[in-house]
Length: 173
Image (tube, rainbow, N blue to C red; front, side):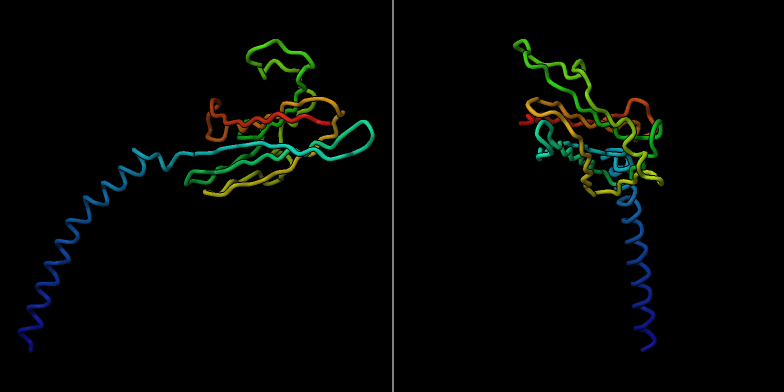
């Protein structure tokens, strides 16, 4: 019985050594693929915006802006407000008459703005990986106009050039 146990032990050691030799290059390939090719260590935020209109009084309506930030990446995104990551919300009015062709939304007059949305959260705004959020920002607006709503997330990855945004057009009757 002792001879068989020694043989099994020898073969088991050989199998584990071979398995380790195979696992090392496979693991190295996985690391290179995940971090270099797929950029899993990079932030990957998305943001979208929609709006609903509700009655408020005779001449005004309640414009309910839904800002929906989403972290599609695999690392958390921390927005601290201001230069360390923030969400800016603007509501601009489309003029009654526009020339035919594309509309430059950046040149529309801004009626309402929330420049530092993250400021309302004392500990900042942490977006966990794979999670979508829905933030509601209400505005009281005059009826009978069309609005261009934009939400913009900036500086989310320690770079002044990082920006994602979403836009929505809504007619308030």
